[in-house]
Length: 282
Image (cartoon, rainbow, N blue to C red):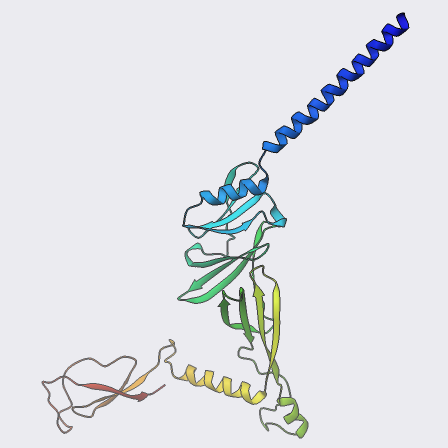
């Protein structure tokens, strides 16, 4: 009799524990069913943003709990788990006054600064490493001569060229091209580099354009002429002539002051000169 009672008691305990366990599982499943996922939280947060905000990245793989967005030339990150928002600090070499564009790649963010409508700097924020870096694509002894932005292709293209230094290939400054071999080598004195980066800061195209020594010499001659056309301050000096008395002067700007030269025909000492720009002195 005692054995039967013990058996029945053990069975009741086991049944009770199983029921509690199942109830616990059901309760947990029920709670999980009503809990929002990170994606749902992100979607809800994006809907709260105003028209002045530009969504950049939503839960990127490198930072899967943040919604990155730009607002008033600042990059911000909203953490959906903690429901908090922070502003990403710019690096010291980024001048916030000159920020013109902020673009999103697949994983990173690109910031472009401009000075007088010309691209001045291109920076990439590495989301995984939480830091900015400046793109400086040109090889050694070369310099960026132009930077072009293409929003449709989602890339920035740099043109790299030599500055003030002749390529050391097949050319003698005293005798010119001294042999057929020199002439052949001179067909490609050096290569101009055209490098394109996507908005993640990754190289997507690297094109080398051959430049002959003759082309380089023409470019240097043009640069020399432009340098000579200034007075040392970077401003050109022009030749002006008075249409009344014919007097000619050199000046960076239109000469001032009345009084045509009385020794010249059609002069009028009391009248003002009427200057016309007739050429460039230097």
